[in-house]
Image 1 (cartoon, helix red, strand yellow):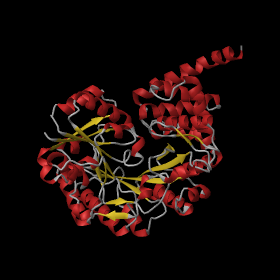
Image 2 (image 1 turned 90 degrees about the horizontal axis):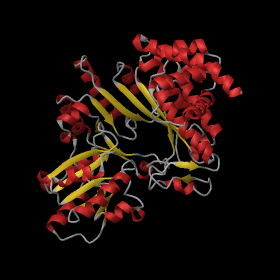
Image 3 (image 1 turned 120 degrees about the horizontal axis):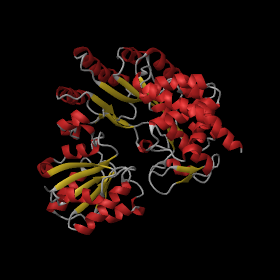
Image 4 (image 1 turned 90 degrees about the vertical axis):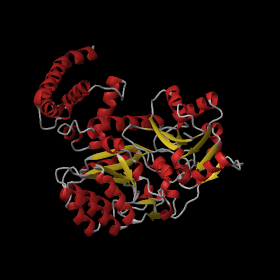
Length: 501
């Protein structure tokens, strides 16, 4: 094997779309190119051993915010034990501010931006000469029709066990300053007939889970409708073997034609990821985000009330100009709209994004290490930001997990942010942890907190229904949960007396 394409994915179920694009576009080098993926958390020496087992001359690494530290260790070890192997880097994490990055210093070459045609050309120079003199190579952006689509590179194992990432377009016309897509000039569509033919081939091979990475799926409604009709046709033809499609949509752009198509999807076949990020108009203006908040809220409400699509809606804490009260108001507004999941994100300083222009004016302090999360602003001090980080983690455990569907309304009641923040602070005081909390323990803690709010009977009934994620199906786990909650209730007076003493 001459060339290896590799990356460390966040999970096994993630399959790298970028590496498969490279493999598809290697041309005459494709027969001597192989893809080998790993998962973060793997032992560095094991990764290096498995890479070198193929005796590669070139290894190309896809580098992202979630894997840069581990990939840096892999590259450092490769340069110690196999210095003759040429290391080429690419990916969003190393495409910007490369001079200050250790991993770039360790590597031989770097391709910034689009690598579809530049990486194969660089490999030909490395293998056949003349040897490239420059370390950094700016990726050329060819017309999309000149890029070979990557979907045949998904293996049968990928189709059977992993999420298949697809894209009908690249780029984004919006300029939200916290997002790398803000650097794009526009969105570029792939040829739709060719793209749908690739989806057809994947479906014929057994693919049923498709996740679109398009930043603005519903920007071109005609294209959106054709793609949705493709999935509706598959659902009609194979009702017992349904497809599942995930799209990222612009929240304030949902014309009637698209609504009519969405209404046709049955439950469990359609998911929308919707980026709200902030409901504060001043903050939106500050970060160059164009959004009609009233229309966005109206569309989310309609989707929740009239369709069977699953909604995953994003908010970002720590944006410049937003304090906790403003974020809380947006959070409460979003809870009232009723999406299935609220992704509570913490602002990150992605390399290359324009968000850094607000650093001085708004006191932005970012962690210097990946994922470069915001630590404080002039509106939210470090201690308060840490509370928000814990809130986000507990929100995932309690709300987004789906395991507390009946209990969550008891927690949130008439002031969702304030009540969940109170629970979050209390959970942290009790556990000193935000990870590795067993479900039994979490259920008992939530029950104890609700009893402290005077909701003992309601808590027992709700937790019995929700325990182990079996909402509405008490079964054997409900008895276990009820027993744990009642035992904890008996202990509570003793704890109160001890605390008073």
